[in-house]
Image (cartoon, rainbow, N blue to C red; front, side):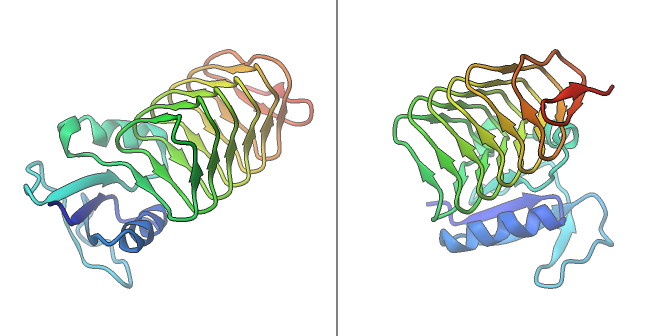
Length: 198
């Protein structure tokens, strides 16, 4: 039985991931490329490419592109799914390995969530949403039913995306934005209603 989780990335986000792992009964260790990084409560070791057989890996980095880069350096078999005990997730969902559901997350029936996603504190993902790999749904964001989120997209804190909307690949949705129309790839949208600013 595996009882240790190695968090790759000694960061503030990594500390939140560590707390979830500890609540679930795992022991925790950190790897980072910067051996001088310090975390008050944890020891940080140099990142290795060989994973001990008694450990899972989780990427503890909030940046979607860095998380994707790091995850590709290890076999898919090393990753696990972490769900905070207060997360409410329908049994009729699919969630990929490497994904983390923070405290008070709600994921409703029929949602499909990819690998290495961050479902951050208090976000709501309603029925039949599709979230591609390496997306980050920030605290208090709300995705209404049948929303599609592209790979590597970041939905900002408190944003709302109405039902049936498709948000493209590598999009940044500003904090508090209200998305009422489809959003193309590789843009930043802000405001209510949201508009493309770059």
